[in-house]
Amino acid sequence: MTEGVRYPWSEDDVAKLKSLAGRRTTKEIAAELGRTTGATVVEASKLKISLDTRRHSGRPANRREEQSAGAPD
Image (cartoon, rainbow, N blue to C red):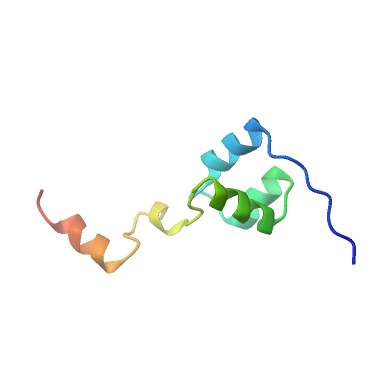
């Protein structure tokens, strides 16, 4: 089985990953970058970038966040 060719991540690639993370799906980000979803997930993980889109939907990501959103500061 042949391994895929690996291309280093440029500063522009990383900047685009950071700007799209959480706003688009991993599949969409990977397509935009011309990379596989696996490569995109691995690079995001290395950089500690969350690809979770749930927090950007206007709804709390979980019940604890929902409860704290209604609590006064």
